[in-house]
Length: 232
View 1 (cartoon, rainbow, N blue to C red):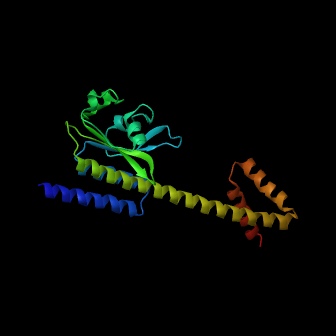
View 2 (view 1 turned 90 degrees about the vertical axis):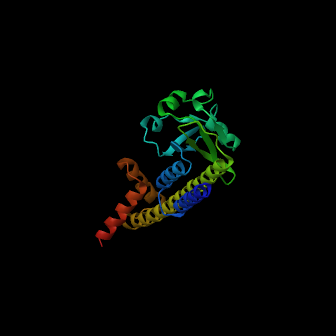
View 3 (view 1 turned 45 degrees about the horizontal axis):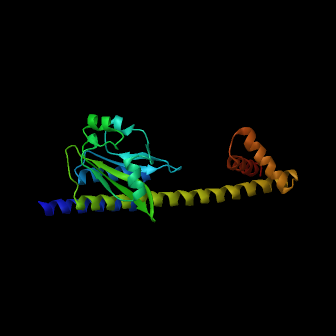
């Protein structure tokens, strides 16, 4: 029985690993991770919370729970919360019964949703904690070291997925910025040629049109280029 359980957990870890290397959006990857993890650890709820840009709150980014009350749970402050403690310490934390734990901020919700035991582990990538993964059981449960280790492996893989997505987004933003500069340079050249303008004056024309029309300078540049091509 134990061998079958470990084999199933191994298969689940492979699923998580494959999801990270697949060409999926981050939301899809995180949602797949919580579904697989909840099944793997026989949890009622699994959720992934990421640190916001200010580094002050943890925000739920994925959960397989169908409970609207849980999904709408307020962001958790890093200071003074169990989740924040896990994030700052970079160590896992298990609670046998959150309903009787004074540090747990949502005891009423735990009672309503029948949540009892909790395991929380940090998501760490490049020596930086960027979020946490929580799992809850319906019945009282002492989490084994194997379960803690498995959830930590999942958390670290999820952290890699988040980091990879950020790097990809930064690359795309840099590429778009370069394309925008090229279009603006081309549009400036057209205005300089057609209206006998200096480079700075041509740039000011594009900028003013952008401000007046509430459109991006890229859009204005594309319009100028299109008009020039149609007039040829």
